[in-house]
Length: 302
Image 1 (cartoon, rainbow, N blue to C red):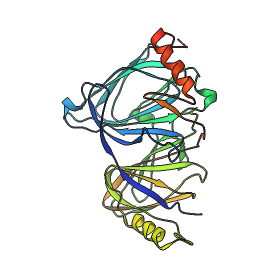
Image 2 (cartoon, rainbow, N blue to C red):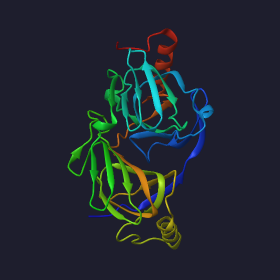
Image 3 (cartoon, rainbow, N blue to C red):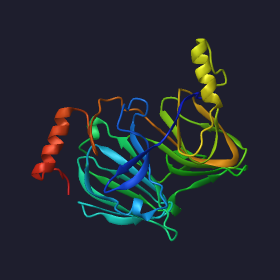
């Protein structure tokens, strides 16, 4: 067994999307090598209705999958294929845009005006860019939980953990998507696939992610000091943690406990050509997608 050393700990940046939704961008719209097969992640957490009620009106997607996980409030959604519904607290929607859809997402606060959720974009390989669109709407009660003796709670949205399998399936990136809550002061070791991209996103409390059991090897003094600094850094609210290779992640919760998403997926390792919500492999494919939008041929499957 080898512990994955921490590669980076970064904070979010304030962003406005849709028709004026204030959110925090965890990563995205840059170099995708470090997060492949994942392209972008947003934390849309807000207590002010005026900062989210305008929502995300009709917009296109092609070539990706979007994962929406709601913790507070609701999200009404609909699309050009006739699908519609409402996501509530604890619900998940995994949408395969494939060849293209138009859809909208309109957030609504809970009784106290709070809205909180995440949206993660996963890339599709070239062989599936133009596949038929598909929805998986998963209710909160369908998501299994694993509760350890020490009080750690793991919601298994996708993939397997503790002998339980999440309800989302058939996803190109073959991801694991876990919502993990660790009680105050507890230390946990979590198994991960050596060959997958892995990141953690802390959104409640704080803690430390350990480095490797033999953390440094032969490093220059500057490299050594840099690794030492990362190992001392606390990952607090709205912190994204990326890792080097290994098959375990070790985390020590702080005195207030911590809650984080642990996400992993198989890298696609293909060129990425990106224009907003459309992600293809080449510029020519992007031009074709924009032409399809202008000429009414964007929707290939009905």
